[in-house]
Amino acid sequence: MSVSEDRTVQPSPSTAAVSGIADPAPLGLAAFALTTFLLSAKNAGWMTHATGNAWLGYAFAYGGLAQLLAGMWEFRNRNVFGATAFSTYGGFWIGLGLWVQFVVNPAVAAIRPATAAATVASLNHDLGWILLAFVIFNTYMLILSTQVNMAVFAVFLTLELTEIILCIGNFTAGAALLPTGTIKFGGYVGIITALVAWYTSAAGVSNGIAGRLRFPVGRPLIG
Image (cartoon, rainbow, N blue to C red; front, side, top):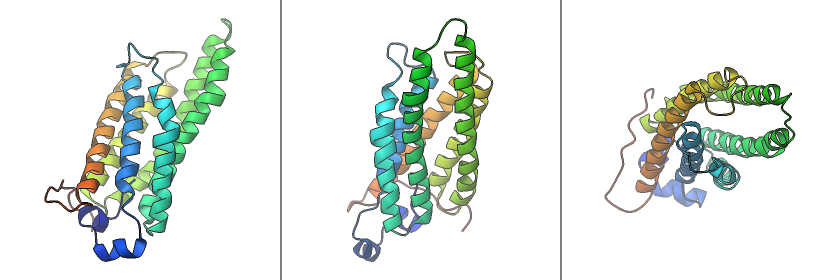
């Protein structure tokens, strides 16, 4: 969910002229950040006076669709890292939304007292497996992000921690309907992830407009 350092830090007019489109990374990062923030706030237990499902619509429209589009535009820009990251996490949000709509909601609606514990435990394990799969993906993207810049590396690092903590939390949650202590902790780390992604998005916007204000993103760890 990033761009190469050249486009993030100092966009090249010649590159922009060839591609014909603006840098899509700030949009993809913002979409990822907002949806992550909403779901993480739920996991952290902040939404005490809300349904807790504010994230769901945005999983389709913003974190999903907008981020997927950013990934497609990154393909147009020949940025394989950004295209892979944005497209994958756009698919993640759409897939998670579909899983809630077509698996979780029907399962919850069909719950009977005798089977409630088993059903909830199965759903928690489902989510644990989903997160484990994305931990695997995110691990090699985290390693490769060391060649982009520090801001992008920080996004993948905090996201890696979030996914690992939530993966463990869901595998160990059993039949708990409400977030456990581990899931709440993952929610707080997810909020940090969202803030880091928003900052990186803001840096991309600041470096893509004609102005003196620039948000630093740091040098690559390896490069």
